[in-house]
Image (cartoon, rainbow, N blue to C red; front, side, top):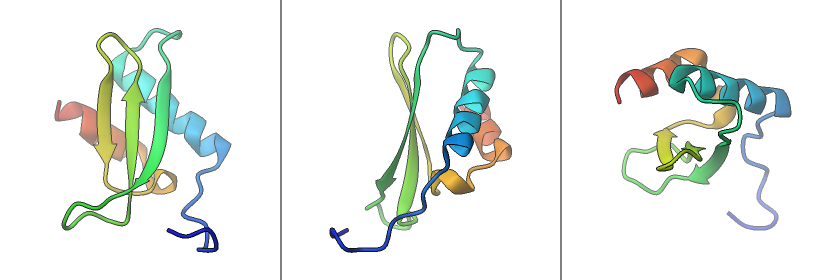
Length: 85
């Protein structure tokens, strides 16, 4: 991705907060445990161009991936990730 490439799927602050809330709810996290959401270019074969990485700053830290842009993630996607762990 170059400096003048079109912007990637941007996630709104509201969508980001909703996504963090779903993660916190599914993991029954205490309020003080931070959740970080990042969008990264996915280079794995068969992976969409953007994936969302969810990092939970618990002890030990936990990392989860959803193979789609954060703006497209639904509550069902979050449920699926955490029900398979």
